[in-house]
Image 1 (cartoon, rainbow, N blue to C red):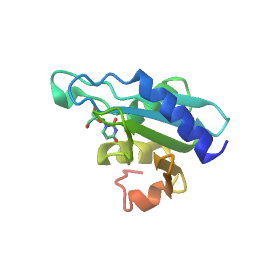
Image 2 (tube, rainbow, N blue to C red; image 1 turned 45 degrees about the vertical axis):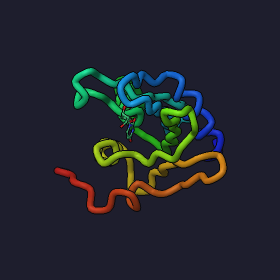
Image 3 (cartoon, rainbow, N blue to C red; image 1 turned 60 degrees about the vertical axis):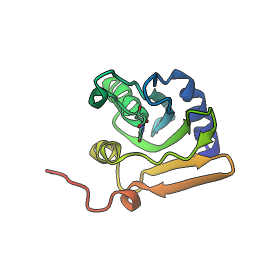
Image 4 (cartoon, rainbow, N blue to C red; image 1 turned 90 degrees about the vertical axis):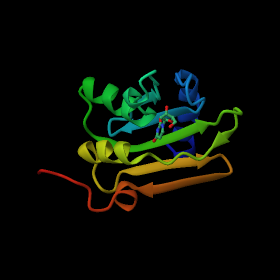
Length: 131
Ligand code: THU
């Protein structure tokens, strides 16, 4: 699967987002080593801190399905005006990804015109680990 193909699935996942408070809709597509793709989307809560990001919903769905080997994740986002904008994963999501993914895991984000692909190690160097 190409980066662009995974990003297109992340764009589809934007439609699953529930973001009545921020109006910022995020979709994620997580590619497993076995070829399966898990979609995620942000789910907001009236108690704002209870909100969960798109990346984490994708990871948690996959892990609950028994998947633990991942290749890459793509993230797509639409702002309040319905325009696609670049949305690199937040710090908490980077840490969650680091729990399950190797340092060469790829993170794909941006827009159709400007798609970025960077390793997890590059966006989260010196990640915390107990192992
Ligand atoms: N959000 C994500 O889904 N992923 C990120 O990595 C950063 C932010 C969501 C959370 C919230 O619903 C909205 O974007 C605005 O912060």
